[in-house]
Length: 71
Image 1 (cartoon, helix red, strand yellow):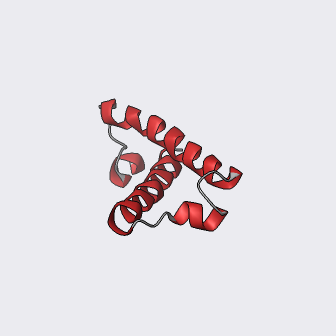
Image 2 (cartoon, helix red, strand yellow):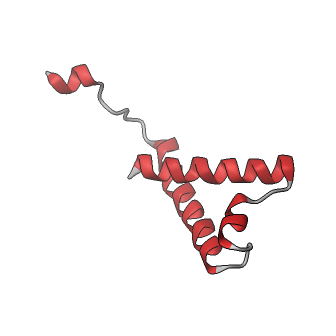
């Protein structure tokens, strides 16, 4: 779930970067405008992914390495 949330968050960040640099919203372009149902769903998914990833900031445990799992 973490990787899915991070992937969605990265895509949302790249979209915001394109808006900031070029004034072009890829999500709105793909789904037919910022207020279309598809765009709004994607924007909500990005927000949910961002909320999910907040917990990654506060998790002190790291994922075990491959070598540690093999033991």
